[in-house]
Amino acid sequence: MESAAALAKELGRWNEVSDFYRRASELCRECGRAQPASDALAKGASALEEKSPEEAIKMYDEACTILEDDGKEQMAFDLYRAAAELYIKMEKYSDAAAFFLRLGSAADKCNAMNSQCKAYLSAIIIYLYAHDFQQAQKCYNDCSEVQAFLNSDQNRCATKLLSAYEEGDAEEIKRIGQSSAFNHLDHVVIRLARKLPTGDLQAIKKAADDGEDSLDEDDLT
Image 1 (cartoon, helix red, strand yellow):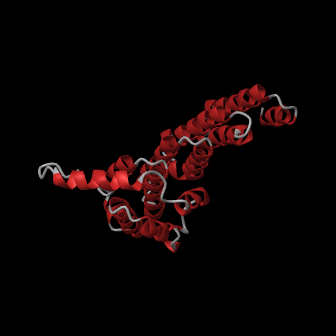
Image 2 (tube, rainbow, N blue to C red):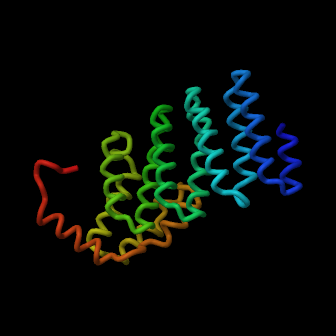
Image 3 (cartoon, rainbow, N blue to C red):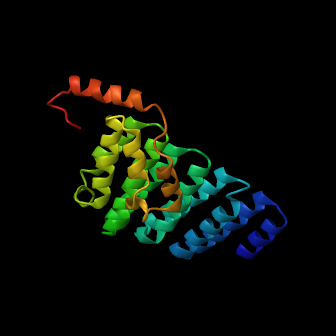
């Protein structure tokens, strides 16, 4: 089936590429072989990234789910990243961030703390790049409830970055974005960090100032 899919790709018959890789995956699942079943979908997704990105995303998603259901989250790390990278190419930034958060959750189950912290920082950077400061702040707050992230270098980096946004300090944001703190993230995320800040900094600063004036002491989330 995978050979047939590869041949269909050579012939440019893109619907058949998806069908054959999906059939290969189904056959593996019928034999109880989660890893090869996921691999088949991942191969299909990779083959379809340019010609049919929406279908590629679905296949990456299903490939991840197969491994998650089999308790093999660690084997899916590269698939989460590939899906997130494709979403960034498609300029669907919220979806890209969601995949990094999914990677963070999977890493948590595997005690892969470094991967987890990098995934959370990546999601925050993506929200900032997409001009969604509120979502970046919420993501930071949610992720900081995880002890591993709270004590990490990635958390300290995110704290500095968000503070610079609240102060409307474009130069400081650029300095942080160019720093070596991001060098261990995925290349596609590094490129976004290097382009910060985007959006209306003064509007963010005003919102932050307004928020301080009306802070509810009973709700610090």
